[in-house]
Image (tube, rainbow, N blue to C red; front, side):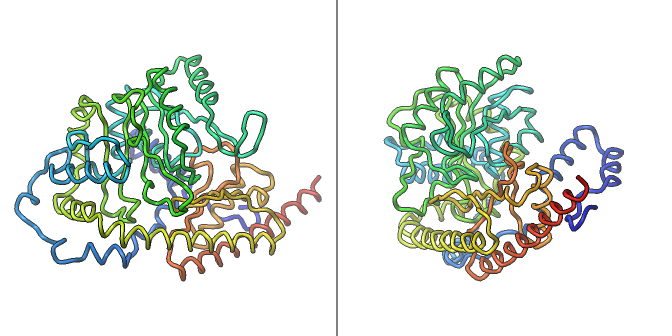
Length: 440
C-alpha cells in the first residue's frame, strides 16, 4: 500500500473464495456489487423524520383489516392504484385524468426498471442512457436483465458542440445510436431522469419533446425516471412531467417511474410505473409475485398520498425550506474550503433534489479513476459516503455526488469531516508530487 492510501474493500482471497463457491453469474454480480456499492455497508437506514412521522404514526395509519394480510393484486391493491392515479394526475399536471389500470406497483423503482427492461428488451439488447446517471439502474440491468446500458457521454466543459455544461443534445443521441448500430447492437430504448440524478437538472418542456420525438423517429421506448419531481426547492425552477404534455409523440412507448424518495421513506420500498401501454401492464403484472409491496404498507401509502392538504400545506413547504437551507449551507462551506486550501471546487448550482455534483479533480495527481478511488476511500475512512463519478459511468475522473439532505447538526459534522479528508488528500497529493520529482 502506498503512502497513506485507504485500504481496498475486497481482498484477493475473498475474490478467490467467491469464484470457488458461486456460479459465474454469481461471481459477476458479487464483483459488480463490491466495485460499485462497497459504501452501502455504511448506510444506516432511514432516519427519523419528525414532519413525516407526525402523519405516518397517527393511530388510523396503523389500521389493519383481513384483506391487507392476504396476497394482493400483483399490480398493487386497486385502492392504492386509484390513489396513485389521482396523485400523479395532480402533481404531474396531467391534462387528462390518469387511470388506475395503467399503474403498476412494485417494491422499488429499480425493481420497476428491471421488470420493464425485461418486458421491453431481449437479452443483449441495449438502452441509451445519458451520463452521469443513477448507478442503481446499472446494477439492476446487469444483475437481472442482461440488457446493456450504453452511455451517452455529456461533457462538463463548454465547447463548440457543448453550449452548456452537461447539455444533452439530440446530436449526441443520434451519434450514440449510430455507433451502437455499427457494432450490431439492437437498441430498444432511451432512459432519462427528470429531475436528473446526480446533476439536479430539470429538463425544459421543449427538450423533453425533442427527446420524445427522437425516440419515436427511431422506434425506441422512453423510460423516464421522475423520482425527485416533488423535490424542486427553488421556486424559480418549473418542473414539467412528461405526463403534463398535451400529447405524447408515442404514448405506447412512453413509461414513467416514480417512487418513495420525494417523501424520504425509502424503507417503505415502493416504486410506481405509469404507462399507457396495456400490453406492458399485462407483462409487468407477474413481477408482483416476486416484488410486491405488503398490504399494510399499501394502506399507509394510500393514506399518505391521499392527504393532499397535508402534503401541500405542511410537508412540501417544510421539506423545500429545509432543502434550500441545507443546500445553501453546503455551498457556503464549499466556498470556505476553496479559500482555505487554495483550489477550485467546481460544482453544479441546482435547485432540486438531494445532491450536489462536485468536481475535485484538482486533488487528483494524476487525474485518473484510480486516484478518484483513493479519494473515495479517504472519504469512507472519515465515515462519509460520497459516490464517485465512475459509479455513474461518467467519463471524467474527479467528480463526486455529495448529499446535503440532512439535519443541520449532522450536516455540520459531515462538512467538518469533509474538510479533514480534503486536507489529508492535499497533503497526499503534495507528497506524491515531491516523490515523483525525486524519481524523475
